[in-house]
Image (cartoon, rainbow, N blue to C red):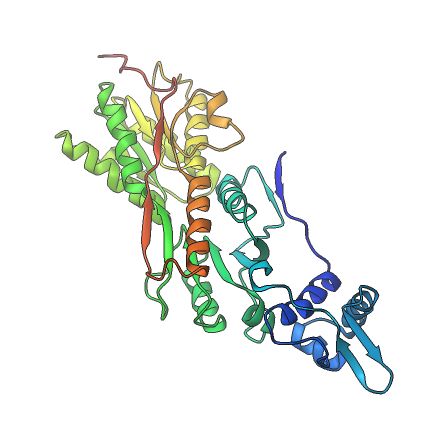
Length: 363
C-alpha cells in the first residue's frame, strides 16, 4: 500500500529547532543566556534529559557555548529576515506522519498542501488535533495553521491557544460560529449530487434510489442535489427510493438490499459516498444484479487506489488535491500580507463517466 510519509522528528531534534527558532524570530540574540535546563524542559514540554541532549548537540554545532558557573549562551546568528523559513502546522484528528493511500481524503489534500509549500521557504509541522495552551512553541514558532477535517470543538480550543496574528485556514469542516473567523475551503457537495443524478436522468432513468447516512452533512448536501435534479426534471420520486441507515458496512449492504426489494421498478442507484458505493456494489452482487445491465450506478469519490476505475464505475470526483493546493496558496498570501480578508471557497467536483451507467433495460 502506498503511503504519504513525512519524516517524524525526534524530541531532541524538535527541542533543538525550538531553541534555534527563538534566535531566528529575535527572542534570543547572539550572546544571550538560555534559561536553566529545568525551565527549558517545562517551556517545551519535554524531559530534562531531552533538553540536555539537545544542548549537547547545539554545543557540538557551535550554536551555544557553556561557561562553567555562568550558564549557557547563544552563539548562533539569526539568518537574514528573507532567509527565515515559515513553519505551517497541519492539524488533523488523525496521525499525519504516515497517511495510507486508502485514507484518500487526507492523502490527496496533504499531497496538494505539501506540493505548494515545499516549493517555497515553508516547512510543514505535523500535529494531531490537540496541543497545550501552554505550548509556547506554538505561540512563537508557527507562522500559520491549516486544519484538516477538524470538528468545531477542536477549533474552539485552537482559537483559545493560538495568538490572533497567526492566520488559520480550515479544509472540509469550516467552523461557523467561533469567536475568530476562519477562511475555509470546501467541496460543493450539493452540485456533486446534482450532476450525478442529472447524468442518470440524461440516460433515461427516472426511478433512482439513494442511500443516506443522516449523521453525515456531506451526504445530506449531496441528497439536496439529488432532490433538486429530480425536481428540475419534474420527477417526483417514491419515498421508498430513499433509505436511511447507520454507517457500518453490514448495515449499508442490508439497506441497499432492502432498497432493491422494495423497488422492483428501480433502474439506477446514486451512492453518495465511497463506502456507500462499495456497499451498493456488494449488495448488487448478493442479489445477482449486474452493473449496468440490471442496475446503473453512480458513486461519489474516486480514490487514488483506482478502485472505481478498475471496476469501471461512474463517479463524482472531489478536487481534494486542488483543495489542498488552494489552501496552501491562500496561507502563503496571508503570511506575506497579500490577503487579509476571510472567505469561504467552494470547489466544484467533476463527473467521471465510465461504464456503470446505461439506458434502463425496459426503455
